[in-house]
Image (tube, rainbow, N blue to C red; front, side, top):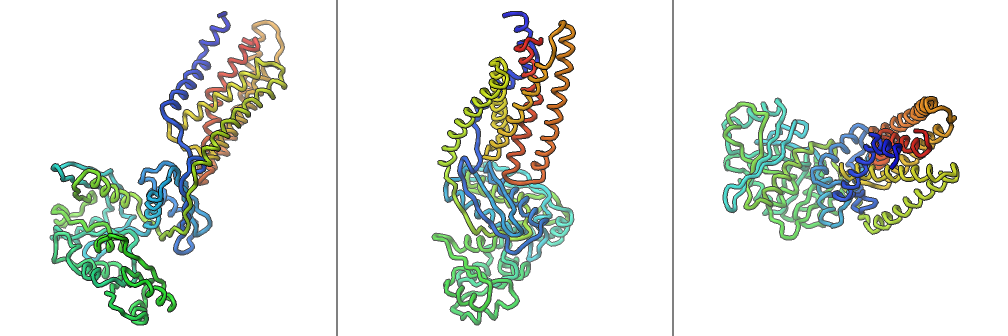
Length: 511
């Protein structure tokens, strides 16, 4: 090994490239890449708002929906607003109908969130300031307690303190998208349950659930006993819609023929009356007011507690409440009008094709650079540097858990294309100098490299500026393209390009 080779291997730019490259390879070995819905497969859902909304409201819808779905723990979620009423939701790595239905349920429960006590709404989702992760502790062999701490606004806390003073044990209800200003037509058994103290926590003297929702949401409840459609329609005057619960479905057709908006809610097989009521009302709770919250003193830091026979059930219940509180409210209700599974088999085929295409692209770069310079000592390092950039980009993606989709891969290709251009600029500058004395040559190399990197940094700056606009102001697939393009450009200008310049100077005898 001669002196020049030793000097190259000690160059900090080359050493830095080797370290980053080795780290990327190790990362890829330990943390496999994750892919987006168009490669890994998943489910695509089309949701529609109950009425057209403006751009600001639609932005609130997508932001809140993103927050709600993120709490489910799914990795790759893209949410795109299309027009003023349609929202497209894509979730990767979802293969079972059960998972898809869970996501659908979350999307459709995105109406307004209410906190109610004694028939009075004392807060909405806007009053939830902060939600802390759930706490779970074991009390006995088959006894677990969970709690979800959260913070509400001062105004909401003061309103609740006045309502709850001296009413320890009374029920506090939370609702997601309750049937506001509606007529509920329910079976006799369901009516009796709602009009009993079954939902009163530790205070049988408190208002019944039926009375609470009537006062808070202007909901009327009718016990169905074969009333005619005309009789029901008369009671529904002034209401937004009619909700039929566990009653003959033919009533829906008769009421709709009279111009009424009707929603039919059948009983799920094996579902209890209590579960049916909570599902129809979007009810979470009731939760009993603690002694410390019934003294008339406002508390902005509160918590919801519950118990379960095992840790799994406790965790499920706590996470459900955490999700509800964390997501806030939507200003408008969403309904899923379409759902389609995307098979991962297409993605598997694409990954193989992408590998072949990548190898073919590197070979093409190698041949083009060779025929341009007629020098393998230039062509091989250029193609190798492009390969190193791909490995490093993928290593970073694996490290941060970025899900690669088709636009992300397109961004990698764009970054590599820019990188080859910049390496050609460096090579041309090196080859343009005259060979004279060693001192003159060294001075000339520094000036030429300065010119080359001025062009490279200017090109990188414009690319990053353009891609940053996409990253900040656009949603969905364009973000993946912008992110990987910016990542590739940054890796190029700070890692691979400086190292290539040192290697090229060595190979061309300029150092």
